[in-house]
Length: 201
Image (cartoon, rainbow, N blue to C red; front, top):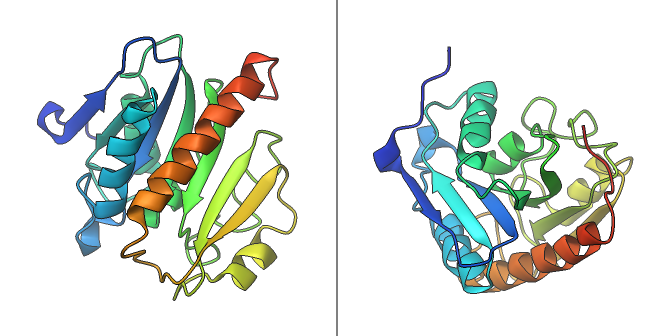
């Protein structure tokens, strides 16, 4: 049975009236990734500032399936009437694309290691799901540059790929821009979802 998330390793912000929320998933815990990672921290600041609830937490292990269990547990900390976007960076992106619950209206994958972790390319759970996906791909990503990301997702539905210019996998100096892009995208797909469901199970 996967471990229960430790309350002291979870942070939640819920702005008044928030109708959308995001589960933020950090890089690989075996390589120093945690909820205070610079990209996750930038998102945790930017999204609530835009009226979007956010939850971040430390994974209980480096196992992908346990990470998804953790993420679903964290999702339950968001308002029950809020729609949810799953946002993952690096290893967190590999965790994110296996989460397909009914409350989820979309996914944002940042510097996703597509093709390097099992089920992360064409076999990803979200690949043929019609709900929207945003991939933010560093122009000089050492693990999955834009050309590889396009190849790996060529059969994915409802997928937008945007490059992060002048950045590698660690996106130094680009975290504020990532926060702005993700906040804007979530707000846009929330408005779209309010006009009618796109999918879900």
